[in-house]
Length: 514
Image 1 (cartoon, helix red, strand yellow):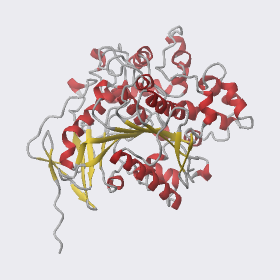
Image 2 (tube, helix red, strand yellow):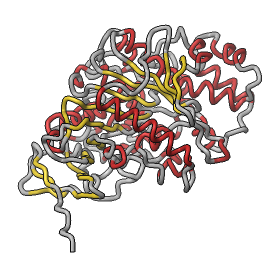
Image 3 (tube, one colour):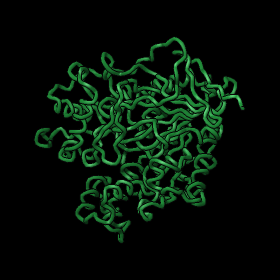
Image 4 (cartoon, helix red, strand yellow):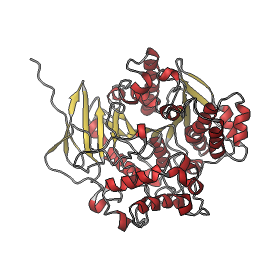
């Protein structure tokens, strides 16, 4: 009878942990990188985890932070347990020896800045780690806990959680077989927006060498807008928007108050502008301290120029939301006109979309402008800003269409995540690919996973970097290829638009707009 595999043990800076060996992979789950942000630490920046004696079992994911329940199909898992130890980290290592010095890939999840958890089949790091990397995932605060802007509270606590997790990686990952000098952060949607912010944050400098930002959102808030959202959340509780008043509030009660604001957010469009119509009550805040400038401004000025960057988007980002809301093919011309007036750039943007797409039906027009405003143009412009500031950026587009829903999803938002991780069964993968993913899905997944790992390993994903005026782009399709930027029509429409902090329309009375 074969001898059972010994459970791997690692000594971290806080204490020893015991993981499990699963199919030859050393896996450690639920290791705290910071203390529970509750009680005296509620709405405070992260504080390093307390040390422990003995060996801590690291076999289960940590509990999720409070999750919005107001997103419908996009809502996150509810934490029904008693533990408030939200801030935990997970590691997959093919060779947990201090001499291995493997590249490290640290995932930051998305979720509209409202939901997110490292748990689940989509973010399992085993397949990616088998390429020859140590893969790290972690939980961080979201919603009002992470991004709520309140008087007296340190802003951007979610971003500071991410910095704390990266500091844990710096201090501990060598013991798991990783190279702390070859850390790549990668993330999608809100995770990519967080990475863009980390690139612009002095506090994050030196914590990662490379970054992959998949579908970067264009929303960052100015402090007045963020404070107004925070005041609306506090008003739902009958409290002033201050740390002193809100810190004693139970986290789930704070979450429920934020969900109440989310439920009525479109009525605040006159005061909050685009974020109200896009249902985005939280985002990183350009507070002048934690995040001094918007990512696009900071990168253009040379911040983060020493970090190599891959950024890009999916061809049909917004189709996910249109299909899942049951609106595909049902958008009226009046609705499309309203979306164009709100989200197309400048005074001539709406007319430019109509002129460029004269045969487009209302659903297609809506999806085009929302794909561009939400993700496509912010991602392109991040690469351009990084290049202008002296950095090295690589552009990509996922163009391979998901087969589910009769192909209606196209290359939709989120499709890239299971493809990069190599997890094509369960979660969003099953939604988009069906119970039996086609051979082409596995081929595209292999191409993306191989490119991301190569980039983490030595900085070259396999195609030429973006240059001003050239913008070569790797297109992941059934046959991957490299071409000039494929969304040139949209690029030209948005050429004069600057992605900066979104501002409050203070001339509109808050009562009248609620």
